[in-house]
Amino acid sequence: MSLPTLPPSLLPALQYVMRPLVRLMLRKGVTFTNFAELLKQIFVDVAEREFRLDDKPPTDSRISLLTGVHRKDVRRLRAKEVGQGASLPEAVSFGAHLVSVWLNNTPFCAQPGQPLPLARLASNGAECSFDGLVAQVSKDIRARVVLDEWLRLGIVRIDDQDRVHLETMAFIPQSGFDEKAAYFQHNLHDHACAAVHNLTEGGEPFFERSVHYDSLSPAAVLQLREAVRAEGMQMLIGFNQLAAGLEERDVATPDARQRITIGLYFYTEPSPPAVSTPTTASSP
Image (tube, rainbow, N blue to C red; front, side, top):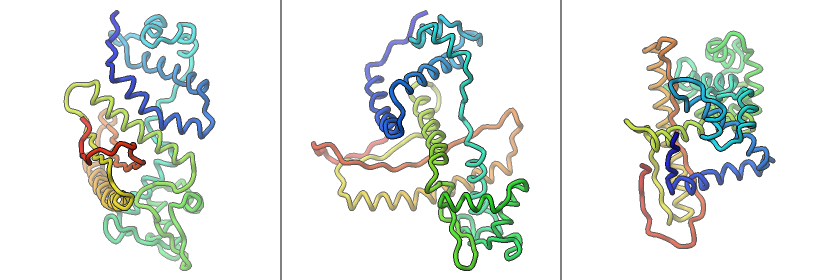
């Protein structure tokens, strides 16, 4: 079996991509030893699941050859279960659904994208209340439990009239590391999947484009940041409304369901000392 030729540009690209991940690991106490063991497990699991011949499970020897992981480690690691992590945790998925209903469905919004403040209790606001909102999505979860958690995460606030205000246009917790980590896992994974597909697969690429400049002033960066926050959020709300309508109208059979992720991000940092001419470009 011949192994693929390693493109000379790949390792430098991977080294650059890994820097922010290593920064996160060091800040949160993940050592090289911890990560090396985790990485071994991932190499073995991906080789076993995605590099089969004639849909037959590969042998330990073949996985060792593909990955460079010692055969003894391959045998040990294949016995472990590895979570795929494709779905968001139930609490996060429920929260995202609830915010979407609040943003898009009457009587909880003035019009799509304009959520109304809701009476906290159904006794004061009937269906147009936070109790009514939670009941529309689930009869099994108490509204008070959701409200307490959302207050902790900074997703909502309560005013002096006992009305609940939505403080975000998406389920983006302002605090709560586990909830933020769930979105980090989901969004970075799917962005990486799109980019890897475009590098390695034929056919139509996934949409993945960016605009980048390197000689902007801090004031200009601030203006762009605010524009992305405002206009980008409106764009995502529009996609959310379209997806919600399509999901309701075109009900897929259980064996034909697909999930999607549509993302937008903004990042800035100081440019290298050598200032170049401002340019704009798109990723391939």
